[in-house]
Length: 337
Ligand code: DAH
Image 1 (cartoon, helix red, strand yellow):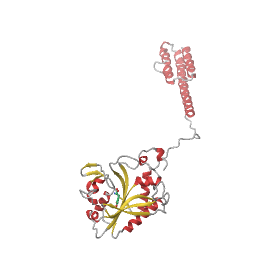
Image 2 (image 1 turned 60 degrees about the vertical axis):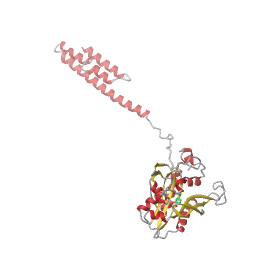
Image 3 (image 1 turned 180 degrees about the horizontal axis):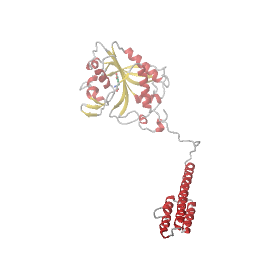
Image 4 (image 1 turned 30 degrees about the horizontal axis):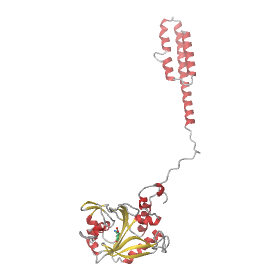
Protein backbone atom coordinates (compact mmCIF):
# COMPACT_ATOMS: atom_id res chain seq x y z
CA UNK A 1 0.00 0.00 0.00
CA UNK A 2 2.84 2.25 0.84
CA UNK A 3 4.23 1.66 -2.62
CA UNK A 4 0.87 2.34 -4.18
CA UNK A 5 0.66 5.70 -2.40
CA UNK A 6 4.21 6.55 -3.43
CA UNK A 7 3.34 5.66 -6.99
CA UNK A 8 0.25 7.90 -6.95
CA UNK A 9 2.30 10.79 -5.70
CA UNK A 10 5.00 10.29 -8.32
CA UNK A 11 2.48 9.92 -11.07
CA UNK A 12 0.70 13.13 -10.04
CA UNK A 13 4.02 14.92 -9.90
CA UNK A 14 4.91 13.64 -13.34
CA UNK A 15 1.54 14.64 -14.79
CA UNK A 16 1.72 18.16 -13.42
CA UNK A 17 4.97 18.81 -15.26
CA UNK A 18 3.29 18.46 -18.64
CA UNK A 19 2.75 21.64 -20.66
CA UNK A 20 -1.00 21.58 -21.06
CA UNK A 21 -2.40 19.56 -18.23
CA UNK A 22 -6.08 19.42 -17.58
CA UNK A 23 -6.09 20.21 -13.88
CA UNK A 24 -9.72 19.29 -13.39
CA UNK A 25 -9.19 15.89 -14.95
CA UNK A 26 -6.20 15.36 -12.76
CA UNK A 27 -8.13 16.30 -9.65
CA UNK A 28 -10.90 13.84 -10.44
CA UNK A 29 -8.47 11.10 -11.31
CA UNK A 30 -6.43 11.32 -8.12
CA UNK A 31 -8.64 12.97 -5.52
CA UNK A 32 -12.21 12.35 -6.74
CA UNK A 33 -14.71 10.00 -5.15
CA UNK A 34 -13.80 7.31 -7.61
CA UNK A 35 -10.21 8.46 -7.76
CA UNK A 36 -7.07 6.48 -7.12
CA UNK A 37 -6.41 7.79 -3.64
CA UNK A 38 -9.94 7.00 -2.52
CA UNK A 39 -9.69 3.46 -3.79
CA UNK A 40 -6.49 2.98 -1.78
CA UNK A 41 -8.20 4.29 1.34
CA UNK A 42 -11.08 1.94 0.74
CA UNK A 43 -8.69 -0.98 0.97
CA UNK A 44 -7.55 0.11 4.46
CA UNK A 45 -9.99 -2.32 6.07
CA UNK A 46 -7.62 -5.10 5.18
CA UNK A 47 -4.75 -3.56 7.17
CA UNK A 48 -3.67 -4.41 10.66
CA UNK A 49 -4.57 -1.92 13.42
CA UNK A 50 -0.87 -0.97 13.64
CA UNK A 51 -0.54 -0.26 9.95
CA UNK A 52 -3.76 1.73 9.67
CA UNK A 53 -2.70 5.04 11.26
CA UNK A 54 0.63 4.97 9.45
CA UNK A 55 -0.95 4.43 6.06
CA UNK A 56 -3.79 6.86 6.92
CA UNK A 57 -1.31 9.62 7.71
CA UNK A 58 0.65 8.90 4.59
CA UNK A 59 -2.51 8.98 2.48
CA UNK A 60 -3.41 12.36 3.99
CA UNK A 61 0.03 13.70 3.18
CA UNK A 62 -0.20 12.52 -0.39
CA UNK A 63 -3.67 14.13 -0.70
CA UNK A 64 -2.41 17.40 0.76
CA UNK A 65 0.59 17.31 -1.51
CA UNK A 66 -1.48 16.74 -4.65
CA UNK A 67 -4.05 19.41 -3.68
CA UNK A 68 -1.31 21.96 -3.14
CA UNK A 69 0.49 21.03 -6.35
CA UNK A 70 -2.72 21.36 -8.38
CA UNK A 71 -3.46 24.76 -6.83
CA UNK A 72 0.05 25.99 -7.53
CA UNK A 73 -0.03 24.75 -11.08
CA UNK A 74 -3.39 26.50 -11.50
CA UNK A 75 -1.88 29.80 -10.41
CA UNK A 76 1.06 29.33 -12.69
CA UNK A 77 -1.15 28.58 -15.69
CA UNK A 78 -3.28 31.64 -14.97
CA UNK A 79 -0.21 33.84 -14.96
CA UNK A 80 1.04 32.35 -18.18
CA UNK A 81 -2.33 32.87 -19.83
CA UNK A 82 -2.35 36.51 -18.80
CA UNK A 83 1.17 36.97 -20.08
CA UNK A 84 0.43 35.48 -23.47
CA UNK A 85 -2.81 37.49 -23.70
CA UNK A 86 -0.97 40.71 -22.96
CA UNK A 87 1.54 39.82 -25.61
CA UNK A 88 -1.06 38.90 -28.21
CA UNK A 89 -3.40 41.81 -27.60
CA UNK A 90 -0.78 44.49 -27.39
CA UNK A 91 -1.75 47.68 -29.18
CA UNK A 92 0.80 49.59 -31.11
CA UNK A 93 -0.33 53.12 -30.48
CA UNK A 94 2.29 54.48 -32.81
CA UNK A 95 0.62 52.86 -35.85
CA UNK A 96 -1.18 55.29 -38.14
CA UNK A 97 -4.96 55.10 -37.54
CA UNK A 98 -7.91 55.12 -39.89
CA UNK A 99 -8.98 58.73 -40.19
CA UNK A 100 -12.79 58.93 -39.92
CA UNK A 101 -14.45 60.50 -42.93
CA UNK A 102 -15.83 63.89 -42.06
CA UNK A 103 -19.15 64.67 -43.68
CA UNK A 104 -20.18 67.98 -45.17
CA UNK A 105 -23.37 69.83 -45.82
CA UNK A 106 -24.93 69.35 -49.21
CA UNK A 107 -24.49 72.49 -51.34
CA UNK A 108 -28.28 72.96 -51.40
CA UNK A 109 -28.47 72.89 -47.62
CA UNK A 110 -25.43 75.11 -47.36
CA UNK A 111 -26.86 77.83 -49.59
CA UNK A 112 -30.28 77.57 -48.00
CA UNK A 113 -28.70 78.14 -44.60
CA UNK A 114 -26.80 81.14 -45.92
CA UNK A 115 -30.15 82.50 -47.06
CA UNK A 116 -31.66 81.94 -43.64
CA UNK A 117 -28.77 83.81 -42.07
CA UNK A 118 -29.16 86.78 -44.37
CA UNK A 119 -32.91 87.11 -43.86
CA UNK A 120 -32.90 86.30 -40.15
CA UNK A 121 -30.35 89.10 -39.85
CA UNK A 122 -32.91 91.45 -41.40
CA UNK A 123 -35.53 90.43 -38.84
CA UNK A 124 -37.42 87.79 -40.83
CA UNK A 125 -38.89 84.67 -39.23
CA UNK A 126 -39.04 81.25 -40.86
CA UNK A 127 -42.50 79.91 -41.70
CA UNK A 128 -43.33 76.42 -42.89
CA UNK A 129 -46.11 75.11 -45.06
CA UNK A 130 -47.19 71.67 -46.27
CA UNK A 131 -45.83 70.11 -49.45
CA UNK A 132 -49.18 68.42 -50.02
CA UNK A 133 -51.43 71.44 -50.36
CA UNK A 134 -55.06 72.38 -50.94
CA UNK A 135 -55.73 73.90 -54.32
CA UNK A 136 -57.39 76.74 -52.40
CA UNK A 137 -54.05 77.99 -51.05
CA UNK A 138 -52.24 77.32 -54.29
CA UNK A 139 -54.77 79.10 -56.49
CA UNK A 140 -57.87 80.85 -55.13
CA UNK A 141 -56.20 82.52 -52.15
CA UNK A 142 -53.43 83.75 -54.46
CA UNK A 143 -55.82 85.48 -56.82
CA UNK A 144 -55.93 82.66 -59.36
CA UNK A 145 -59.66 81.80 -59.69
CA UNK A 146 -61.04 78.48 -61.01
CA UNK A 147 -60.81 79.21 -64.70
CA UNK A 148 -57.78 81.42 -64.74
CA UNK A 149 -55.36 80.48 -67.52
CA UNK A 150 -52.46 80.48 -65.03
CA UNK A 151 -53.76 77.13 -63.81
CA UNK A 152 -52.75 75.50 -67.05
CA UNK A 153 -49.35 77.04 -67.31
CA UNK A 154 -47.90 74.91 -64.57
CA UNK A 155 -48.15 71.19 -64.79
CA UNK A 156 -49.11 70.25 -61.30
CA UNK A 157 -49.19 66.83 -59.63
CA UNK A 158 -52.75 66.43 -58.35
CA UNK A 159 -53.49 64.05 -55.49
CA UNK A 160 -57.25 64.63 -55.76
CA UNK A 161 -59.01 67.41 -57.72
CA UNK A 162 -58.73 69.60 -54.60
CA UNK A 163 -55.35 68.47 -53.24
CA UNK A 164 -52.00 68.76 -54.98
CA UNK A 165 -48.25 68.78 -54.49
CA UNK A 166 -47.42 72.45 -54.26
CA UNK A 167 -45.69 73.74 -57.37
CA UNK A 168 -44.33 76.79 -55.56
CA UNK A 169 -43.86 78.01 -51.99
CA UNK A 170 -46.25 80.96 -52.50
CA UNK A 171 -49.22 79.20 -50.79
CA UNK A 172 -47.35 79.65 -47.50
CA UNK A 173 -47.97 83.41 -47.90
CA UNK A 174 -51.73 82.87 -47.67
CA UNK A 175 -51.42 80.44 -44.76
CA UNK A 176 -49.30 82.91 -42.78
CA UNK A 177 -51.52 85.91 -43.52
CA UNK A 178 -54.63 83.99 -42.46
CA UNK A 179 -53.15 83.24 -39.07
CA UNK A 180 -50.99 86.23 -38.30
CA UNK A 181 -51.87 89.91 -38.44
CA UNK A 182 -49.30 92.43 -39.70
CA UNK A 183 -46.53 93.24 -39.20
CA UNK A 184 -45.47 90.09 -41.05
CA UNK A 185 -41.92 89.38 -42.09
CA UNK A 186 -41.27 85.76 -43.06
CA UNK A 187 -39.27 83.56 -45.36
CA UNK A 188 -40.41 80.06 -46.19
CA UNK A 189 -37.97 77.58 -47.73
CA UNK A 190 -39.08 74.18 -48.94
CA UNK A 191 -39.62 71.61 -51.64
CA UNK A 192 -41.91 72.14 -54.60
CA UNK A 193 -43.07 69.72 -57.30
CA UNK A 194 -43.80 70.10 -60.99
CA UNK A 195 -44.43 67.39 -63.55
CA UNK A 196 -41.37 68.30 -65.56
CA UNK A 197 -39.15 65.84 -67.39
CA UNK A 198 -35.71 65.52 -65.85
CA UNK A 199 -32.96 67.32 -67.75
CA UNK A 200 -29.98 69.57 -67.00
CA UNK A 201 -32.23 72.42 -65.81
CA UNK A 202 -35.46 70.67 -64.79
CA UNK A 203 -36.45 68.32 -62.03
CA UNK A 204 -39.91 67.23 -60.83
CA UNK A 205 -38.80 68.25 -57.34
CA UNK A 206 -36.77 71.28 -56.42
CA UNK A 207 -36.49 73.91 -53.70
CA UNK A 208 -37.74 77.45 -53.41
CA UNK A 209 -37.48 80.19 -50.86
CA UNK A 210 -40.47 82.47 -50.48
CA UNK A 211 -40.46 85.86 -48.78
CA UNK A 212 -43.33 88.00 -47.53
CA UNK A 213 -43.49 91.34 -45.76
CA UNK A 214 -46.79 93.01 -44.84
CA UNK A 215 -47.16 96.15 -42.74
CA UNK A 216 -48.41 99.71 -42.93
CA UNK A 217 -46.63 101.77 -45.56
CA UNK A 218 -44.57 99.01 -47.22
CA UNK A 219 -43.43 100.16 -50.68
CA UNK A 220 -41.57 98.87 -53.68
CA UNK A 221 -38.55 100.74 -52.28
CA UNK A 222 -38.57 98.33 -49.32
CA UNK A 223 -38.67 95.39 -51.72
CA UNK A 224 -35.76 96.78 -53.69
CA UNK A 225 -33.66 97.54 -50.63
CA UNK A 226 -34.29 94.11 -49.16
CA UNK A 227 -33.39 92.25 -52.34
CA UNK A 228 -30.35 94.41 -52.98
CA UNK A 229 -28.97 93.67 -49.52
CA UNK A 230 -29.73 89.98 -50.02
CA UNK A 231 -27.95 89.92 -53.39
CA UNK A 232 -24.89 91.67 -52.00
CA UNK A 233 -24.61 89.32 -49.05
CA UNK A 234 -25.18 86.29 -51.26
CA UNK A 235 -23.08 87.17 -54.29
CA UNK A 236 -20.68 89.87 -53.15
CA UNK A 237 -20.77 93.54 -52.20
CA UNK A 238 -20.47 94.88 -55.72
CA UNK A 239 -23.60 93.08 -56.91
CA UNK A 240 -26.34 95.25 -58.39
CA UNK A 241 -29.93 94.23 -59.02
CA UNK A 242 -32.32 95.03 -61.85
CA UNK A 243 -36.11 94.82 -61.99
CA UNK A 244 -37.85 93.83 -65.21
CA UNK A 245 -41.64 94.20 -65.45
CA UNK A 246 -43.43 90.87 -65.39
CA UNK A 247 -46.78 89.38 -64.46
CA UNK A 248 -47.70 87.22 -61.49
CA UNK A 249 -51.37 86.92 -60.47
CA UNK A 250 -50.57 87.42 -56.78
CA UNK A 251 -48.52 90.60 -57.11
CA UNK A 252 -49.16 93.97 -58.69
CA UNK A 253 -46.91 95.39 -59.94
CA UNK A 254 -44.74 92.33 -60.52
CA UNK A 255 -41.14 92.00 -61.60
CA UNK A 256 -38.48 89.54 -62.46
CA UNK A 257 -35.26 90.37 -60.69
CA UNK A 258 -31.75 89.93 -62.07
CA UNK A 259 -28.40 90.27 -60.33
CA UNK A 260 -25.31 91.60 -62.06
CA UNK A 261 -23.10 88.66 -62.96
CA UNK A 262 -20.84 87.96 -60.00
CA UNK A 263 -18.27 86.28 -62.24
CA UNK A 264 -17.68 89.01 -64.84
CA UNK A 265 -19.26 91.91 -62.98
CA UNK A 266 -21.63 92.60 -65.90
CA UNK A 267 -19.34 92.46 -68.90
CA UNK A 268 -20.72 89.16 -70.14
CA UNK A 269 -19.23 85.71 -69.70
CA UNK A 270 -20.00 82.01 -69.83
CA UNK A 271 -21.90 81.99 -66.51
CA UNK A 272 -24.28 84.83 -67.50
CA UNK A 273 -24.31 83.63 -71.12
CA UNK A 274 -22.96 86.96 -72.30
CA UNK A 275 -25.84 88.92 -70.73
CA UNK A 276 -24.04 90.48 -67.77
CA UNK A 277 -27.18 89.73 -65.72
CA UNK A 278 -28.56 86.57 -64.14
CA UNK A 279 -32.25 86.18 -63.36
CA UNK A 280 -32.70 84.90 -59.82
CA UNK A 281 -36.26 85.52 -58.66
CA UNK A 282 -39.81 86.77 -59.10
CA UNK A 283 -41.23 89.47 -56.87
CA UNK A 284 -43.80 92.22 -56.53
CA UNK A 285 -46.22 94.09 -54.31
CA UNK A 286 -48.80 91.74 -52.79
CA UNK A 287 -52.03 92.05 -54.82
CA UNK A 288 -54.86 93.72 -52.85
CA UNK A 289 -57.08 90.71 -53.63
CA UNK A 290 -54.61 88.39 -51.93
CA UNK A 291 -54.54 90.57 -48.82
CA UNK A 292 -58.34 90.70 -48.84
CA UNK A 293 -58.64 86.91 -49.31
CA UNK A 294 -56.57 86.48 -46.18
CA UNK A 295 -58.52 88.97 -44.07
CA UNK A 296 -56.08 91.87 -44.28
CA UNK A 297 -57.43 95.30 -45.29
CA UNK A 298 -55.49 96.50 -48.37
CA UNK A 299 -56.48 100.10 -47.59
CA UNK A 300 -54.54 99.92 -44.34
CA UNK A 301 -51.75 97.49 -45.17
CA UNK A 302 -49.48 96.79 -48.09
CA UNK A 303 -46.75 94.27 -48.66
CA UNK A 304 -44.17 92.75 -50.93
CA UNK A 305 -43.35 89.16 -51.78
CA UNK A 306 -40.65 87.28 -53.64
CA UNK A 307 -39.80 83.73 -54.55
CA UNK A 308 -36.59 82.16 -55.77
CA UNK A 309 -35.34 78.74 -56.78
CA UNK A 310 -32.58 77.54 -54.49
CA UNK A 311 -31.11 75.11 -57.06
CA UNK A 312 -30.75 77.95 -59.50
CA UNK A 313 -28.80 80.04 -57.01
CA UNK A 314 -26.58 77.10 -56.05
CA UNK A 315 -25.86 76.41 -59.73
CA UNK A 316 -25.01 80.05 -60.43
CA UNK A 317 -22.90 80.43 -57.33
CA UNK A 318 -20.82 77.31 -57.94
CA UNK A 319 -20.88 77.23 -61.74
CA UNK A 320 -22.76 73.90 -61.88
CA UNK A 321 -24.24 73.32 -65.31
CA UNK A 322 -26.33 70.21 -64.67
CA UNK A 323 -28.98 70.17 -61.95
CA UNK A 324 -28.98 66.37 -61.79
CA UNK A 325 -25.57 66.47 -60.11
CA UNK A 326 -27.29 67.92 -57.04
CA UNK A 327 -29.48 64.85 -56.59
CA UNK A 328 -27.14 61.99 -57.51
CA UNK A 329 -25.34 62.07 -54.17
CA UNK A 330 -22.00 61.24 -55.69
CA UNK A 331 -19.56 61.99 -52.89
CA UNK A 332 -16.81 62.88 -55.39
CA UNK A 333 -19.01 65.72 -56.61
CA UNK A 334 -20.38 66.79 -53.24
CA UNK A 335 -16.96 66.86 -51.60
CA UNK A 336 -16.01 69.92 -53.57
CA UNK A 337 -18.25 72.37 -51.77
N1 DAH B 1 -44.04 81.62 -57.20
C1 DAH B 1 -43.28 82.15 -58.32
C2 DAH B 1 -42.71 81.02 -59.15
O1 DAH B 1 -42.71 79.89 -58.70
C3 DAH B 1 -42.19 83.03 -57.81
C4 DAH B 1 -42.73 84.28 -57.20
C5 DAH B 1 -42.97 85.39 -57.95
C6 DAH B 1 -43.02 84.31 -55.84
C7 DAH B 1 -43.47 86.53 -57.39
C8 DAH B 1 -43.51 85.47 -55.27
C9 DAH B 1 -43.72 86.58 -56.07
O2 DAH B 1 -43.79 85.57 -53.98
O3 DAH B 1 -44.22 87.70 -55.49
O4 DAH B 1 -42.29 81.24 -60.23
